[in-house]
Amino acid sequence: MEITIFGKGNMAKAIGHNLEMGNDVSYYGSHDTVQQFGDLVIMAVPYPALEKIAQQYQQELSGKVVVDITNPLNFDTWDELVVPADSSAAQQLQADLPNSKVLKAFNTNFAATLMSGKVGNNVTAVLVAGDDQDAKNVLKDALSKSPLKVMDAGKLSRARELESVGFMQMTLAASKQIGWDGGFGINE
Amino acid sequence: MEITIFGKGNMAKAIGHNLEMGNDVSYYGSHDTVQQFGDLVIMAVPYPALEKIAQQYQQELSGKVVVDITNPLNFDTWDELVVPADSSAAQQLQADLPNSKVLKAFNTNFAATLMSGKVGNNVTAVLVAGDDQDAKNVLKDALSKSPLKVMDAGKLSRARELESVGFMQMTLAASKQIGWDGGFGINE
Picture 1 (cartoon, helix red, strand yellow):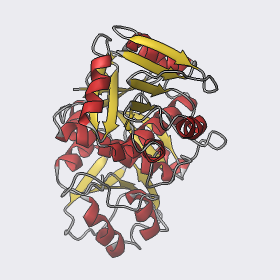
Picture 2 (cartoon, helix red, strand yellow):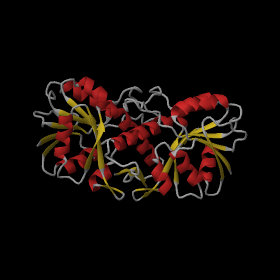
Picture 3 (cartoon, one colour):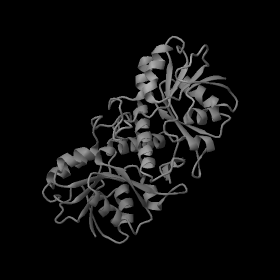
Picture 4 (tube, helix red, strand yellow):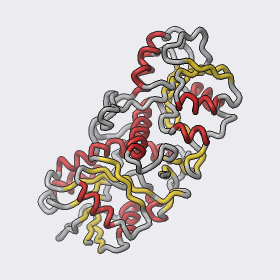
């Protein structure tokens, strides 16, 4: 599968590390010009960069599976998400890309746990929310050769809860109660 | 320490199992009449029962540490929390009990993991949110002889995120992707 990753930071690299197992992955910076998109597009950029990319490539991303991984924290206060209380970054992205199939995924995974494939003794589990089952299957197939476990977190509106999970996990790490290589492991 | 638990269900028993290690615990049903409260009061009742208990005992609970453990799901749809998007059951309880010190805790723990003290290979961690550090210390002291680990989830407004974590964990169990004895283990 051809996969496009926006972003070149730790999360882009850690997600790409897994997706490169069996797929052809291309990386672009937020300001790069993308000539051709894969069928699966990972938006591994900070939340504030999402809207502009969506506006720039709305046409080109039509029909594509687009994955939002952001945690839209207010990083000045670490005391709130900057999205409306009854919405989420993923739902906003879907509104900006009405002809794309938006998924929320990877925002509850720290980069180190995606690189290692483990959270403590647990296999790293990717929680995926989205309204389109085919789109979820595309992401699951793309990760099928990686060590990661994919779990279905429900429809796209569950992104609100996933962003809360990500927020809580980040505050536990920022307060040094867990490491950035630890966090929530999911036990079956 | 004298501890009062409202509720006689699985969560009341599982929390009580831990608090009985070193404390004197009394259990009451939602409709029982309580003559005397301990310094720590655990509201191990379903969300809809909270408001009435708070109204009935607002005076008696003045100055007490009161712990909300609820997950205020819409159990008809399993598709939303019934509290306002910008609030939480715990914040509502604090508003109903303005002279009590309300904490959110235990809502991210399944009963079985409180009974066993383990989530998979992880020690069961209790995430506690609240605005009063002394109140958090009271709960932490009360659990000091139990096998549970207590972690600080921040101020009471973080109860919103804790309720989202609880909601997500419950949907994973309801969809049989995890068991009711599994879920989020917290790795340091």
